[in-house]
Image 1: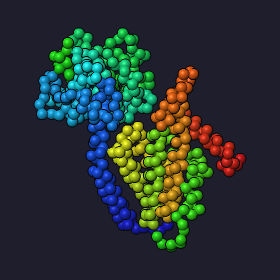
Image 2: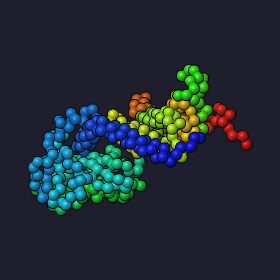
Image 3: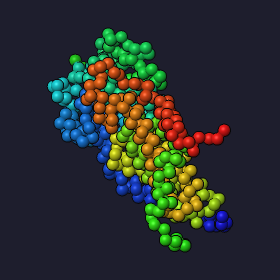
Image 4: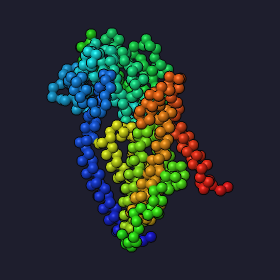
Length: 233
Length: 217
């Protein structure tokens, strides 16, 4: 094997690193629009799933325009905030701000069964990374109409089960309030009885993800407390 | 590059590079490399197919790049250079998947990134590409990627069929009406340990057919 001088090795490394960096930045820039579009479609799809409309990446946009009527932003007192687009609010960034200045997005939807629902995005922490989703409420602002959860990297077969239909469908018809006090929905180890209007069955082997999910729903929906109480029937 | 001996592009020697990893020198069943991802992505046929394709592309192109540069790569930092090339290729593949097959990229999630640590690729770079010309190295990469992919596809075919009752997402068993006679999907096949058992069965089958693979006592 030929011996190379230190100088050669340094120059070789520098050239290699610069070439690779240029190549990767170029690829990232060129592919950015297509990737952003995929994320947008994914977001619309998740929202549709939270109002129990199954969508594919092909028809998500069309269904979204059809069933999701408008989005608006509230502050923590439940008053509308002007000039912010609800769809582009990044929940993760909002959660870092003090509560008073957070933008809280809400979407109004009319699924085909004639129900008028609102969709609230939620985001929290699972075991390995963020978990997020959408919770839709019936017009009484109390009963859950549907939910959609997703995660970045929970354990397959355990925590990752939160985005499966059997888990998500448990939330249908659960209530957030008891009279006028906010209770939210608890995950219960060993299963919740059918009659429990505030409880769902936790995931066996996915305790931390389940608890994270419970905290996520509680923390995120509590911020809407004033708005929900004002419009509650 | 230097001495231009006229060798046809698909000479017997080169073809052997392509076919050997499919059987006699399979990276998974004979060299027992890349097992980790073989367990993880073989629940369904579709992600397995995309993973196989991604690994083949990464192995082939990294082999090509390293073989073309082999005379200029300083020996002392060759492993670093190999890793940089692999990592670059994997990031490119990941970005392309995210842009054009988003659903699949979501399913593969972290495993695309983990192609970087797939021992097959680094093994081929160090053992083959550093000492051979670009074209044979490229073929060697394709061959090894395909050998890896072949096992992935066979394993995922059975795991999807037995575990979910579908083939490439198509509900075969439901269409055939097999469930009516009391058959149920085997949930255990979906779990990673069963992939190991399937790989083991393939190794057993291959060794029992090919005497030369059995170690001498």
